[in-house]
Image 1 (cartoon, rainbow, N blue to C red):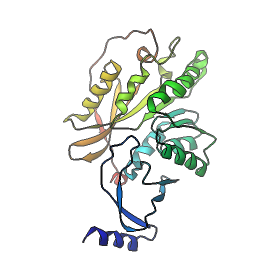
Image 2: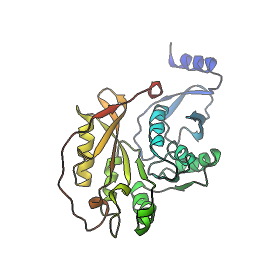
Image 3: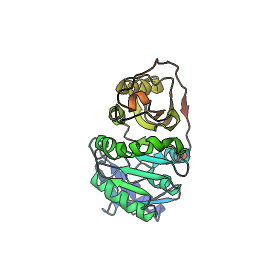
Image 4: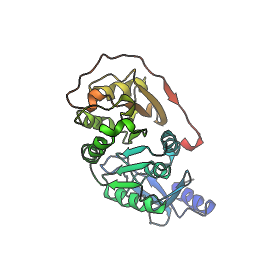
Length: 283
């Protein structure tokens, strides 16, 4: 069956589908979108999807969306409790930010792509969380060294001993996110907060290594200038292609990295196990 006929069959069998498209190149630009050809149906790329009981609308030709990350969006959302704070550095159209905001968390969501920024604002209103999400249109490094730094100085300041909320930072740009970890080095001034209040980072990456968990830990540790092998966990998100995995490394940012004029203690080198959790939503 040729692709044109297949496209028409899919439309005939699924009343909610108005267009069938084929991706004709890889994601290789700053804004994480890709070229598509319409196999059948309308040329209109306006899309409406439901994921984990939330609705998202966007122009699929201009933003990044991957339905195979549904389980991962839920996993991260479940880690946060009401009152927690989330910084979403590469927020896209809101699949982390919106569910977390619905849990009564404070969310700071950023994306460099102006189209993603536009639809992020739209989807926050659509899901009635626009009062809980502060939206930014900045480069990831500028977001971390600007709004994130300012908020962390308040969240982790002298009154932080009375604070019980956790601070989470999600960095879902697997091709490059590890490079942005350098922005955390000497980010904050003053006396370090208690270790239990230090921000928790969830940083995504691809790996083609035979030991992908250790590979991601070593690359992230190299950027930060420390060993993460004893103080991080690695979650296997999904298999992207033969011998290519998408993973998420999670760790608290050490005070010696986050604060200026601090010194590092000795490192340990145990390998935490890689965790494989898949459901049918991943395929």
